[in-house]
Length: 142
Image (tube, rainbow, N blue to C red; front, side):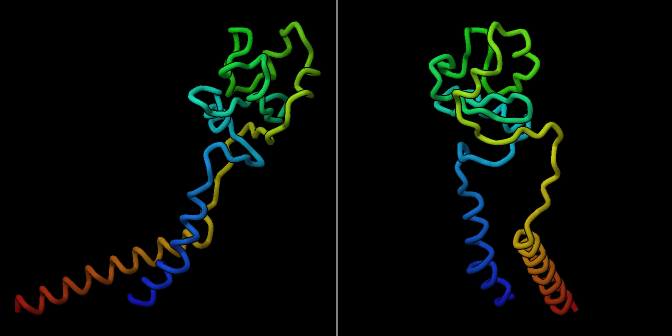
């Protein structure tokens, strides 16, 4: 138990903290529609829009103040269908930086190995403690 606690404290714990410290506005490679919805430009958040499988950062665009465009559209959504009816073409998106790719389907995120090891060691310690308490209580009872 002591050895597994040392591994958790000095190896797995710092890795978990490092992965959790990722800033919410930090750039990623791919975004799901649910993740894209978090970037609506409100409350100081970045404003991202999706178009044809790409995610564009419109935060610094003067046409997207506070995540609103022409008082009709809100950032944080896929604009592929809406841009077809716009008075301008998709050329305007070439003026803003690309933040990443938009995935249409939800991808299953497999848990990293160090997190699986953490959970195995944590539950193993829990089972051992309960078994020890059970054996001690049984021994005291008899």
